[in-house]
Length: 81
Image (cartoon, rainbow, N blue to C red):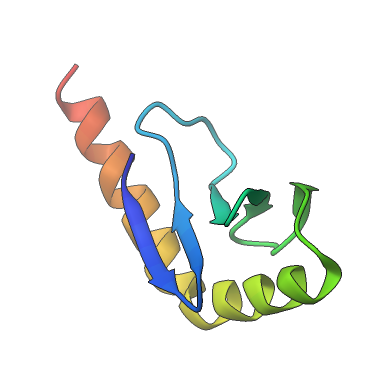
């Protein structure tokens, strides 16, 4: 489970066996969200409204890094098959 960022209590990560489209999972305490990286579209969430706003702000700030990490990870995974 590659972790992309730990900031302001949010943990951004994806699972090693994910599927397209590129997305991240976000945890804060017992709450969570799943967000598509490119579009910043919330797929599902149990975060509070303010937490979701903060989470999306962080995702926008780090979007390019997250996409790069996603593509790097999965291109390596395909290469090892």
